[in-house]
Length: 476
Image (cartoon, rainbow, N blue to C red; front, side, top):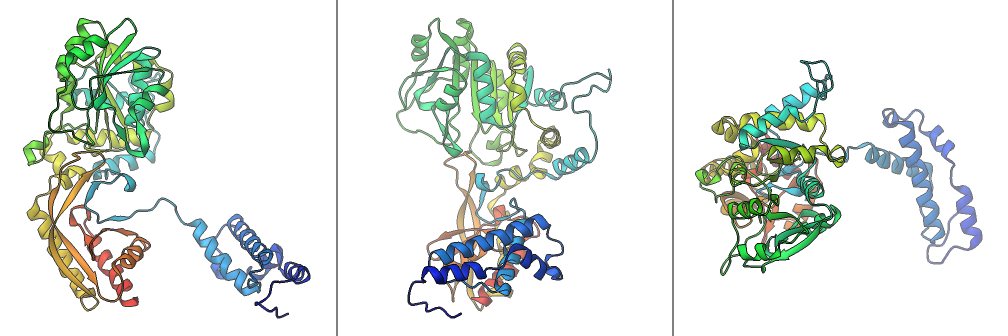
């Protein structure tokens, strides 16, 4: 029956179209010999058919007069079913130049970590088995000694991330008491997580001292009461205040804490085990420096400047860490065997700093010289010109990369990049098509140019980028 699309359907027309809709069983019978469906689970096919039919019903009720032929429904079903069986977590090519890109998973794991994950995941392990005694062991023993060796701490424990580490330490050491912290250190980290919020959820009471730009030792001294449970220092790794400023060093704060028998904690945020200033980058406080300054507990991330898996590492004095280990919440925040395997392999590389910088992707990208980026940019430019030069202008430009992940907030890394100015499509459309490609390619736009930053482009990805760009620009 042909229905006039210029007028609304009558109730009779709607009823007729709804009645004419094929049933699920009818569609299943129609596709039983269709090779395209053979490797798709039946549950997925059923869910797709029902979803498509329901969409058609809604369109009919809205007077949109959809196609209800079998072939149209089948084509829509195969598209939806294929989409449903795709992995949601997929690899992407990071051409943004942001090394620790939070939205793209932060630190890339080194080959040693990947090999250890594979080894551990394919076999039973001694995760909580003491091989020497044959009795139950402690999972953190796989990395605790190694962490203490690298940070000079007396003891250590690892949880799921640094926010969890801060939460656990606060809950253990200062629940139902006041925690004194400078106003200038009440930072907000990614995902709108704020130090005051974490403190509140951990059961502590915030006591702010000083001002946004200046805090003195006397501010902490005057804030101490019988209700004070902890002195907290937060390293502002994701922003800087310059000009008329003053802050209290960790050594001074630790001495004040010792004098008043109050534990002192520092949240380093990113945390690093090497001195980046030796590689021409700004100095970032070493974990070992915080430990030697007398702090009772120090927390930092595993997947930022350390270059390992997501983890929150807690180091400090043995009696303090023992209390944290005994907190029942530790079990809720503990890390799994794969994270432990990746973290152990990453940490072992730090026994030889040169090896760590060479083999850990985060360190390698952060310390990459301008000349190294120029060489990578020239190779990519040559590859692209062979493929897309008739359809786009390919040039080299001196631009800047960023560390990302809340680390080195003001640092701009000099980098030679490849710029693309498409001739037949807009740069916005080019960006969208690259983002929706397989694998997705994520670059950045500056003005009317699309930027590919070689600092974060990995070995073997030049050809993928070139081929994908060719398909997009030739297709227009």
